[in-house]
Image (cartoon, rainbow, N blue to C red; front, top):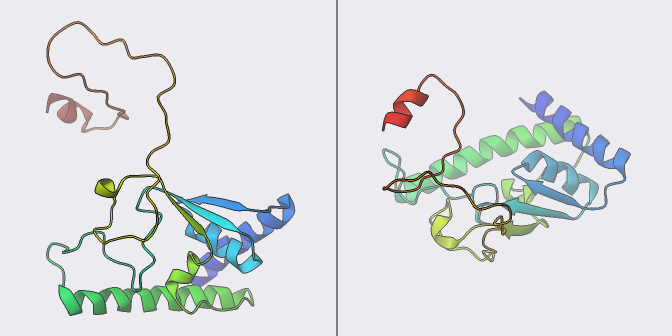
Amino acid sequence: EPMELAGRIQAWRTLYRALGTEQVFADHSPVALIAARTLGLPAVCLGNGFPVPPRLSPFPSFRASPVGAAHGRDLQRLLLANEVSVLKELNHALALLKLKPFALLQDIFRGAVPALLTYSPLDHYEVPRTEAFRGLPDYSYGAPPRWPEGRGPKVFAYLTPNPSLPVVLKA
């Protein structure tokens, strides 16, 4: 919906101006990057492979061969058609704000410095990348875990209550 997208872009632009933003660090926020680009603000796009897509046109699929999907040229046509559709909606939103259109969907990330906080084998995309993999931040600070006595593997799981939790715990 272009009107909703235009509202989100304008909200980011207003926030950046009100705060005197000089640089944007965006983790999984393409709309924040769009707003930064329209204001000429330098940006860094950071995160694991998912929010930092390869600089390819069309954007690649998450899997080299999606199950049940088109393959080869058919897949490339499908990805390109999807991009054309999304770009049309984005440019409609930009026009509502009287902003210049983007030539490609990849323009969202153009000029943003990529910071891939992952390793190549863990990347969501199965294509070669020109961006450097920076690894994972060191989150090893804090007290070591106190494991209960007993045999078997030590597993830490971050779980939230939901109706299927008992089934997950039994597995």
